[in-house]
Each structure stands twice: as C-alpha cells, then as structure tokens.
Image (cartoon, rainbow over all chains, first blue to last red; front, side, top):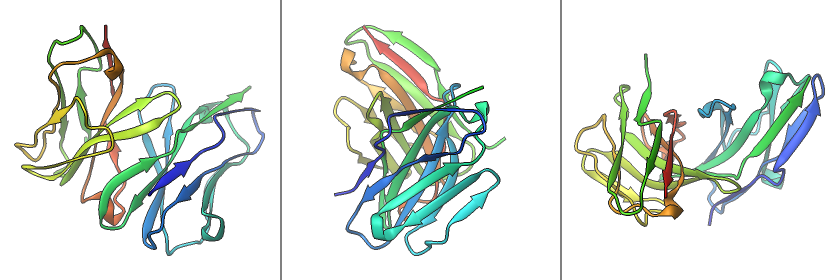
Length: 114
Length: 115
C-alpha cells in the first residue's frame, strides 16, 4: 500500500529563519514519483517540484531546496530565509509508475511571522 | 491562458438535492481527476479518467458520480448529497496519466456545504 506522511501539522517561524518540512513515503514499487505542492491562503494548489525514484540528486531553486533520500524514504523541503509570502499549506504527494493514482500527505501549515 | 476551470466556487445546498460541479480544461489533457480536501486528511481522490468514456474509482468514490463525454469536461455529480460530503473539492488534469509522473494542474476549488 502507498502512503505519504507529513508528521508536522503546523510550523511557525519568524521571517528569515530557515525551515524544513518533512515528508516520509511508503511504497514497495521501485519506480515512483514524488511531488510538492503549495496551497497559499487563497486556496489554489501550485505545483513546486517533481522527483522520480531514480534521481536522488538534491535540487535547489532560489530559496527552496529538496532533499530526496531513498534510504530513509524521505523527500524533505527546506525554505531558506523564509518570507511572509511563504505562509501556506504544503503537501507532499506520491504517484506510482503505471498506476494512475496520486497519494497526498495530510499537509503542513507553515506560518511565517514578520 | 492554460487552465482548469471549476464552477461554482462556492455552493450551499440541502441534503438530497442533486448537484453538479463542472470542470473544464483547455490544455487537451488526457487525464482528469477529482479530489476532496478535508482538514487533517489532505487530498483524497474521488474519481479519475484516463480518456473520453474511461473513468475509474479513486479512494473515496461513494456518493459521487462522474462522466467524461468530452475530453475537456469532467463533471462531478452528487445525486443525493449528505452533510458528510461538505468539503473543498478540486478538479485536476495532466497531459498523460500520473503513472508516468505527470504533475497535476488544479482548478481553484469548489467549497461545498451540505446542510
């Protein structure tokens, strides 16, 4: 069975702090894809990144970085020097090769205070 | 502009009164799906469709119907809504199935309240 766990329900930080959002996934399949989505207070869901199971290279995009570790089944998301605009709910998600379902974690609400 | 359009954005209805939430995409995507978002549960898949006339159940299909008569449209039908279907609903699409890693493009959501 597939499962995505985001154990942090809510995190509060002060602007300019670094923050890491944890994501742990479960699957027995060897080919799969991991995603992060952002849901700002306005409610829409914004795609941030996709990683496939064969690519463990970490990725950096501006203040955002992602750490994928198959050994611990984790796909963590770090925001460096957080800003108020980063306040949102962040979802981690999993899809399996050749299987058309998407599995979402329960989300982590990030509050960045000025 | 490439987008997924859901209507209405907000809907308040009473138990048992049939309703339809429309979803349309203008990106010629093969795959479309519906999710509901509830506090503490994240997004759960209701139904998905790989192509016209091809639909399949997600994880929480009970109480919902869908149809895919045209590639661009994928309406969600609640034949007899109940209060436990009060939720935030999202329609999503992707160029091909999510089984090849395509990310989902989401509509803006429909907040449904059933009293």
